Length: 328
Image 1 (cartoon, rainbow, N blue to C red):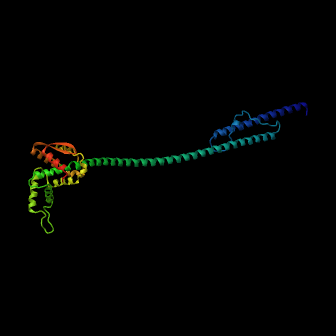
Image 2 (cartoon, helix red, strand yellow):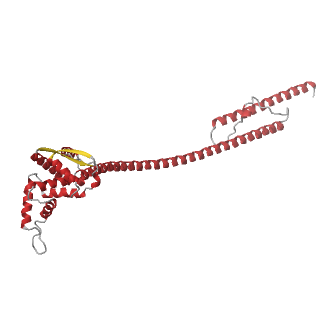
Image 3 (cartoon, rainbow, N blue to C red):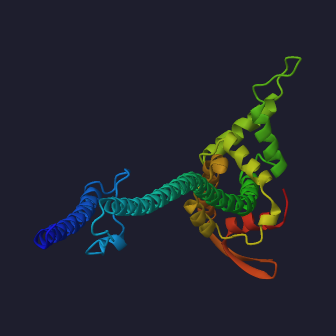
């Protein structure tokens, strides 16, 4: 081969080497671009996609040592580069597995949170039921308190009635004994009141319990009581109330007729003592009538427990003095 031909051949080989180098860089660059495109297109999918790691993305050029004139060496270099990329892909795939694990952990945390929410909801439901029970208990307690207050009020009124009017009833009965000449004593009055209940009864022999003489006395007492609009049952109610009272309630007796009547009219009788209200009212009306018939007389003074009590009316004195004597 001539020198000229050798020179041409050298230039040809040189051009070939340059073309080969350009080809190599172009191929590697295309791989890099293709990798970027696939990663961008399938980002977030669970597919094995060759995603370029950050250290490769930061490189502007891919440097591969390629022999200037050996194609096999170039192919070998490309395969090494592919192998290297595959390793990087596996790294990324492993990172994706870790991300998936984090997702599973988060999902497990969500499950635990849901369990906690369910427990909280159950606790809240129990609290609501407890609140409902407490509200019902409060309603019952409020009702009981109202009933207790009413019972206490009724109790106080009952004590007032039982303690205040016992002596007045006894005094009234003694005034009746004095007023009605047919009556001999308080016991005589009570005997007539008891007999009136038996006037229509008969014993086992068919004989009446009440004789004719007692019937006349019953009739006379009925007429006398009628002057004050009192009946036999009402008088018996007064005596019953007197029996039911207790002397321990008598610490502060009211011995003034006008005052006791004023207080009496303000009282709202409880149900268990309501039956005594009318007889008591009629008794006080009768005492007012009797007081008027006697008129204003000399003043009487009665001493009890070192307290001086002035009575301006004879009836008031009679009632109070008999009551304080403790009889009946």
